[in-house]
Length: 258
Image 1 (cartoon, rainbow, N blue to C red):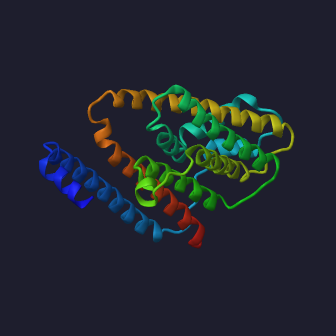
Image 2 (image 1 turned 120 degrees about the vertical axis):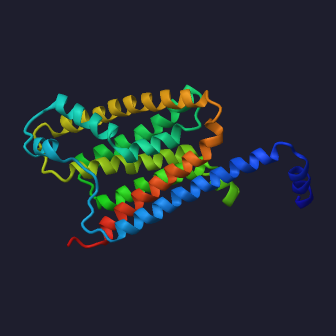
Image 3 (image 1 turned 90 degrees about the vertical axis):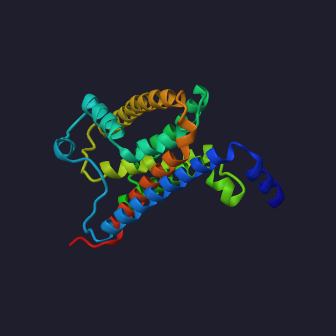
């Protein structure tokens, strides 16, 4: 094997270009990890970090909600998904290398089954967990998918994890993360089932809108020459964002509120 590698390096006219691409990818990955290190250092000295949730007028509305409110809950569910940076980063990772629509539908369906199940069970079934820890796992899901897209599992461990199973499992955590946001409020039992189902449907609407935009952008980018050349660096940045989310949530869990 060493001899074969030596022949390829010395005789292939494409090697200089490949070397340059690899150096660029490594440099981008190092910059991304440097950003994460600095950001996590800053977060390490921050106190009172809270998991992102429902706030402002939306929080006031939920707190005072009595009876069914299908329309507003549809809107809140869609808004939470469209503005949920952690959910969007994970979805970007999931569909980054999916070219066939049936594959996109399969993986998105698994994710939907997962987060719908735990969203409904968490709120209606009264299952509780610390929101910081749940959101830390959600951040790790972003790290996992980006690492897989970079072929990390095969390079370092010799095999890949079943992506379908992983997307389903992480979907459970994403849904539970949504549930913990709603559990912060003393929701009235009057019309609760209809309202939570409406919120979940709104989440699916928001997911559809977000995925449409992401797919349009990815489809266009894939027609450009630089897509595969920058895919590694892009996923390194996505992974860095995942590490940042994990660090943020763990800081909120371990650091006391001053």
